[in-house]
Length: 202
Figure 1 (cartoon, rainbow, N blue to C red):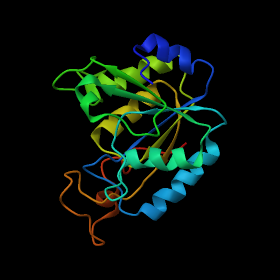
Figure 2: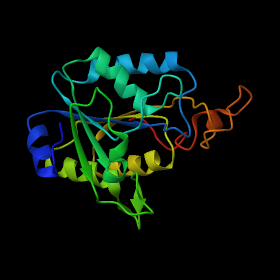
Figure 3: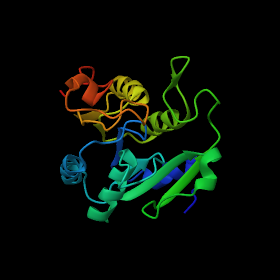
Figure 4: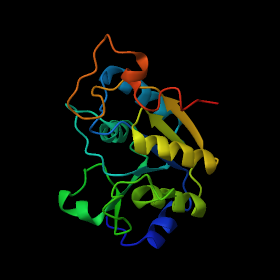
């Protein structure tokens, strides 16, 4: 269902605990899906009943698994969770996965910052939306599975916002370009990526 605007989204999530999952996108992906499934089970055990989960449109693909596929796995295990998709209008023609319960499209982005992160040291696009929602309703916890530059920027933001989080240093399949495969001989810092040694669980 299309929520039309963020006022409606705010009303919809106001009585729920809200969670987020960020991490490896299509240019990194996950190397070992078995380990990811183990992490998904842990996440599902931590999310409270009838909660909401913010999703930012990463395409779920079992054969090229990134954070988008994590949402599909969770939707199969936890039918009680409501999944809210927030995405830019430019991507509307791509549609959205069947596991999404509600979707909202926005135009609050620039050519330089389409997918999220920081622009001029301020949150932009999808990142700005979850920061605004946190100010309105409060995000209960964010789960971080590896991740690239935007993930690291969002980590610093969630720390600033004093949001609880759990970091999983998941090994990636590619070196951030979607082409160069990670090898067994690579250093652990390369296997994990930019978040290694910079995100610490407390």
